[in-house]
Image 1 (cartoon, each protein chain N blue to C red):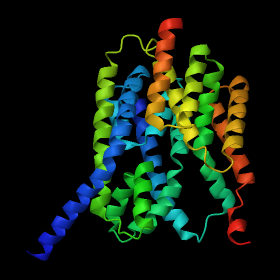
Image 2: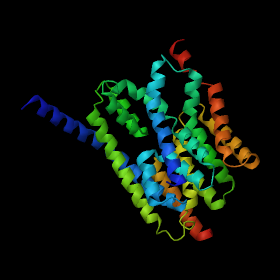
Image 3: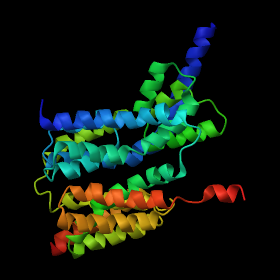
Length: 241
Length: 98
């Protein structure tokens, strides 16, 4: 067997190992992909636009935020900035992942960062921290296993969204707040979570009743983030007494 | 090209910048200032809260019940069971009382 053939077998094995890691994520995200497609249609997207958003933005929570604001006829740049704000957490993932994939050629790194989602980061970080090599084949196996179904299911959801007769009776207009609350709760282990959420909630409600929508998103979030920045957790002092 | 498509593509460009930018920018510094990191950590919960709170304020008893069920479910279960059960509460509630 030539060295090249051995390399190809290793790559294939790594790819499928990565794809297996992605399967639970595919199962868990499938309902949200369909839901995204259905709500996108309800909010005035075409099937092509819904599919384009899943294929190009590729970030579940931020896509839902985009839809929610789009339904309220808000200035385009504010919709874009809100999506940007929700996705801003990727900056931290990106900095952490960069340490594990700096041995890849630059074009492969550029592609790898495109597929960087919460679960992708979590698994790559775990592999890297365990001292294993995060190979391009493994990373793409996991990334594509999640990406391809996500795009296809969004398109199918949008296609079937056209067939929903009465969106209100199946709760379509209020499924997003439930989804967002679930996400908010998933961050509850983070430092200062409760005060940040309480401050953001109060500020958003005050802002929506005074300044008006969509500024409640910016103002509410800014208040919560400002509080977190003013009172950072004192981890370092515990490590170095 | 439609306005929607432009919004999507700009959102995609900025999202890609967040995915590649952390590596390009933050990796140049030895460590991130603790206040910056604490602020960044709080961003998702803060933004998502602003989308829930006003919607909850203007909703009715059926929606409130669904949100309470979702919050309680989150203490024990993952996102998927939470969403399916709270969504079912919402839909059944609306069929009965809506």
